[in-house]
Image 1 (cartoon, rainbow over the protein chains, first blue to last red):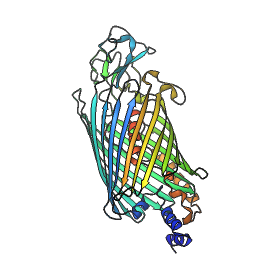
Image 2 (cartoon, each protein chain N blue to C red):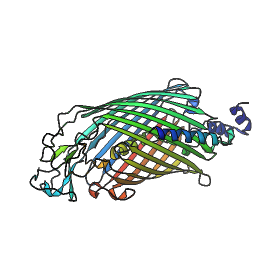
Image 3 (cartoon, each protein chain N blue to C red):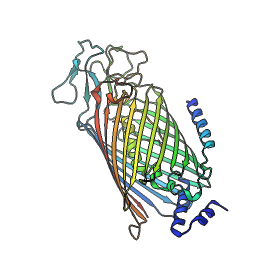
Image 4 (tube, each protein chain N blue to C red):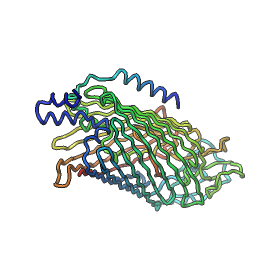
Length: 427
Length: 72
């Protein structure tokens, strides 16, 4: 007797039977079984997201879409697109305030006083780009999933284009479900090939990324599941940010660093190789008396630039009446700084690597948000279901939120808000 | 790197050997509920990851990948 037959015998009435058969699929864990239930009908998703940083820093509008079409019981094709438009000011340089020549109220600097000697413990100032920065990115990917017995094979290609950045990539993956659907094992590999040509300087550089991903999920009990993931990424090529500058005192006049337009100011220079590793753990526990579930996530990250980070996240999903659901989340992130990062440099260093990009500094981020979801089953003659979501999150990025004590200045602290609304239609 | 993956694989083998839970097919109802899913909305998840990736120095996780810059 097969598992399905056992289940059907066990089901005493039709509602229980339907529920039991659906339950056998374990859709929360396994994509494999979704394919087995599929009919040849499309699924469409649209999402609008808005990101806003404090202090008139950048804001981004993000429009995304997804369509999935089942060609047969085994083959599904899927395409995603994204259009991002960002505008606003971003930090371009941090430097000692004693030598920065500024006009009151202006965002940039007018000059650098090269006659003064700078010391390591001096107060720094952050120099921003003008507020008129505006740029749009267009991204698209196209891929397929093919289900064969307990395996899903997937492949996709993607392209992303901005005025100063062009990226092409592909991903290949396989997922294996075994042990009576209690386990999945997945393996993925991808590459991206990027071309960088900034709009404000003559430069044409390339970067290549290799990405390897391993995943494993395990049903622990009737009410709990666990997932483990590991990843390795290797970046090679031009890894600097082409717009970011650094202040370096006393650099050799024959340096290969490009001048940033002012005395002692240069474009940043990062190593041309970076190895990154991560290990992640996620656990979901169902809470019977609330009908809710709690998910706890942890990720450890380390790279060859001596950056390491810890990420903790808790997600609480509470179904409400009439197909409403409330999801709340809390996230804490902490990273240590890159071994070549400094606010400014009072002397040249031996490896010739320099960056004052705030993303390579030591800092922490604390954030939280809520999301409200409503689903209408059999919403119309043409649709199976329609689902809408509205979410908002607020985060604080601060040097003193870093684990094991503050190492960077509070200069680049900021807050940000992320809102999103989406609609999912199943035909 | 290799040691990290070796530990990961040993852990998976140990867990798998220890964890074939005694759950009958008709007892899997809770596991099939939407709130027991690791990723409920792929677009929302990709939006959040894109923002985090452009503000933080870390990559990787349960479903990572990428493309594009979003460098600011």
